[in-house]
Amino acid sequence: MKIDILTIFPEICRGPLSESIMGRAQEAGAVEIVVHDLRDWTTDRHRRVDDEPFGGGPGMVMKVEPFFAAVEELRAEHTKVVLLTPQGTCFDQAMARGFSQEQHLILLCGHYEGVDHRVVEALVDVELSIGDYVLTNGAIAATVVVDAIVRLIPGVLGDDQSVEEESFSDSRLIEGPHYTRPREFRGMEVPEVLLSGHHAKIVEWRRQRAEERTRKNRPDLLG
Ligand code: ABV
Image 1: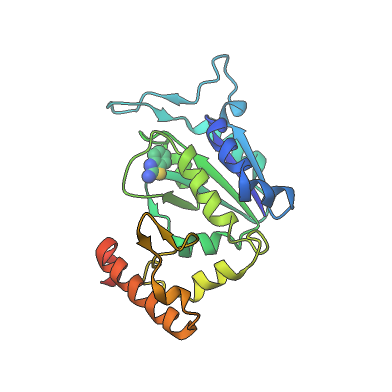
Image 2: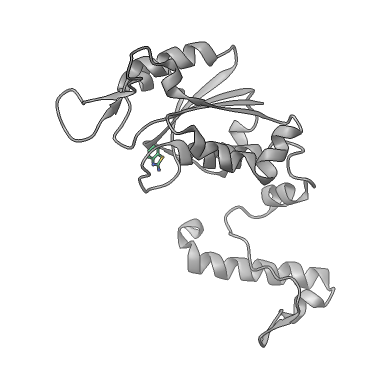
């Protein structure tokens, strides 16, 4: 898989995407991620990427020409073009799974104020947000989306078991609590059932804790 990110803040994406699992996924050739500076597709002396909104109003709007020049240069036969915007559909795990099957993604990052709408109409396949809050620009959102997608590419997580468990476990529930050594810390004990070796009891205990935790933290998932 190939992923191109177009942003005026490439360094925001580069650090996170070179660390840990994302770094190893690229070294192993599972994915090629290229973070581009959108200003490389400007043609004026000041490398201008935004301008005042027609009709007035606060803030600046990202200009149409650099996005067109960049996408026309980078896109191929099977390319999905995604715009990160607070006005987009909210990204979720099912969308991450879908995108992880694509050959080529181009992620466009804009300001929170917006992008010239001709970009949306003529270039963009999907408008995506990462949540109901507003970031200053799309670079962090694009990084989040890429991380969620890349970890689903086969072979990227060392053992496929954790991904498999995710997809088979009840997706209407969040996960229950986890523990590791030591068995006791400052008087706080690891629940006895987890030390019992009784697999069926452990599975049932985890399901109950998952349900409780979902009711407390994510009642919206229970409907
Ligand atoms: C993209 N906020 S996605 C660009 N939740 C600017 C802000 C922003 C996104 C999101």
